[in-house]
Length: 548
Image (cartoon, rainbow, N blue to C red; front, side):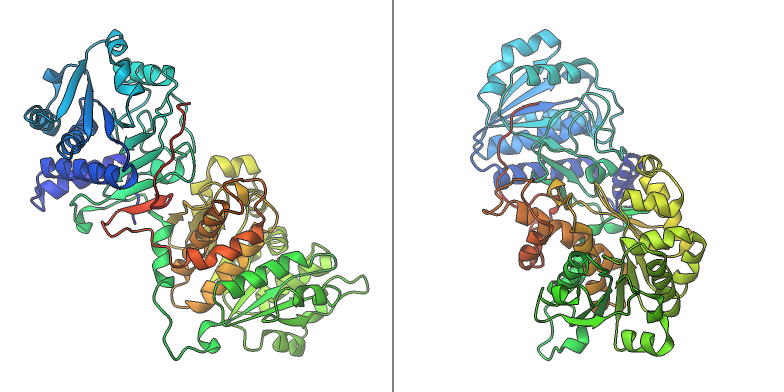
């Protein structure tokens, strides 16, 4: 799914009308219907609904939704911010259609003082629709939209808020988690046709369990065009959804080799290995030092092990690069995953660089392997040449790889990830809030699953195993395989943290807890039968939250 800028979204609507003959007023009617249907599904107990409407097209969407909700038997109240005489185009048509319906209570707010007489519309509502300003808005909020926010906040109500298109006050093109200026709170967001940058980068809702949904309203795929070269990672999960053929055998799903596990570091390779198994690889072998091999082997009876040569101190040795030793290590391997618990000694660094240079297998480098590569950045494009090569750094590791500070990385995540991936011709998974998957062609997928409970040791090791596993199973679709792995990793953790045992607590979730929920992540479908696509949250009723 492509991500469009605000200007590109406006162009899409224009092209839909001019080239494909779908009038813009029909798009607005469809948007209103999408909102009304979403309310019916997600807020079934909301009988009294207050719709805050601006005078632009976002307000027009809200007016259309209000009319449909009123006609469906809901008690709908519209508060129009400003003089309806200044409305134009489709918004004016929506206002006219609303006034022809007797099923909605309409109030015009001309001045801030007029809000005082409408407190009942908020305090007695079961749901508030925020249709004040949308994609075309340029911050900051001012005038009646700002006064409405102040009024809404001052009521200190627990009524949930559904944002139409965007929570009012957000810049649609913002790629930060939070806007600088005032903005409306939201407990759910429904946008149309395609997400804008704010939908995938912003923390739009009060809780990450609350939905951000994209609804189709009639624009054909040919009209949805963007030069941002950004897309949503969740679409890639489709490659994991077909059932396996009846005559499947383990050889059809690849053999992953996890290399790491120096003295005292058994957990990292063990987690990467079990993750690769759980994600569906046919075979997984953990190559670790003899000192930790029994601990790693005990993680699962299905896991195979290989003892690496070590130095007298017990650290992994470059002796493993001897031709016959290396041949035995790589025999039958489909994908190499290197780094978890590898160690940072000069010998371990020499081995890591040598293994990556001497093999031409698809490879995933993480943890200590990334730190080894950071010591020799000029060798990265040579290692990546003519192979699938995936790096999975967190911001600190990315800073070392790129010769920057972590602050610089965080300030320009998109550009740094894109530049690094294209310059070195590899796939870069830059972890963090809204993990980026940057590809050699310059395209970037943004992941919208995951939560703060994942901020613990071991999460990265699980991801390494999952990426390697899906690469092994889908060798002809490496970019989709990596995106799907990132999406599933976060999705499993989202499901886990909402499980009865964790009950939403973000402190107690262990990285490995997510593995127990992969069986629910794999069959999950982000696209509902009505065509709505869930960027965040899932198809459940939305809990109320207090205005903040």
